[in-house]
Image (tube, rainbow, N blue to C red; front, side, top):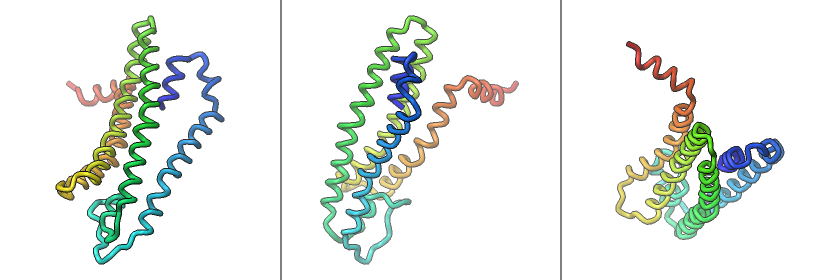
Length: 193
C-alpha cells in the first residue's frame, strides 16, 4: 500500500511503468513468502513442547503464546522467537513504511494545487490510520503475553480479539468515508427530514 501511494503521488506519470502487473505480483509473492517463512517456525516450536493435563486454551483462538503457555515445558525459545519476530517487524517494516510516507508527505507539500494537495493528504491520512490500527493492537497483545504477569486472562482475550476484529471491521469504514458517493448516501439516509 505504501509503495502504491508513493508511486501514485511522487511519480504519477510513471505509475503504470513502475507498477506493472508482473512487479505487483512479485511484490505480493515476496510478502507471502516472507509471511510464511516468519510464521512457519511458530507451529514447529509448539510441536516440540510437552503438554500435560491442562489442554484448554484461555483465548478464543489458537494464538501462539496462548498455546505455548498451557505447555508444561520451557517456553523460553517461543518467547524469544516472538520477541525477535516483533523486533524484525519494528526494525525492518515500520521504518520502510515511515520513510515512504515521509517522502509522500514531502511530495504532497510540494503540490501547488490546493485541491490535489487536500485529496492526496486525505488519502495518506486514511492509509496511516489503517497502518496504526493494524500494527498497534498486536504489539500490545504481544507485549502483554510476554511481560505482563499480573494481567487478568480476560484482558489477553480482549486484546487478541480486538486485533483480529477491529482492523477488518474499520477498514471498509475508513476507506468508505473517503468515498464521496458513499458518504452522500449515508447522509441522505440518516439525515432525512
